[in-house]
Amino acid sequence: MNFGFEGNIIKIEEGELPSVENIYISSQNEELEMSIEILKELIDFKEGNIVQVLISKDKINEDFKLVMKGRVYSILNDEKQKSALISFGGLRCKIVDKKKKINLAAKSDIYIGIKTIKK
Image 1 (spheres, rainbow, N blue to C red):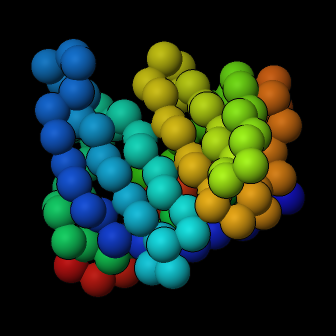
Image 2 (cartoon, rainbow, N blue to C red):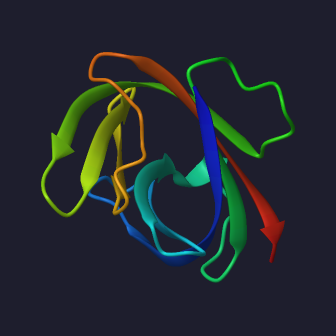
């Protein structure tokens, strides 16, 4: 299972811990939203950047600026959207799919790759 999207970094803010930032990405078609906690020293993303995001059950070997391995710990499904909650060694990620196409299962391991395609 692989899926990806191009999105805009709409906001970067301080996380709950001093060394962590929260990055908010919205897909260009606005069907997917992602928030992810990342250690400050690992990123050079800026608000307004256009990024490519790849989510895979297999190891990502492509040229991504950031690749993280995590575990899906919850899937939330309601009449309007489907959300996946993921932990990357304690750093949290939430992916919200308004079209309910996301196909992730709780307790599965996944990889996320993010790279800037336009600054």
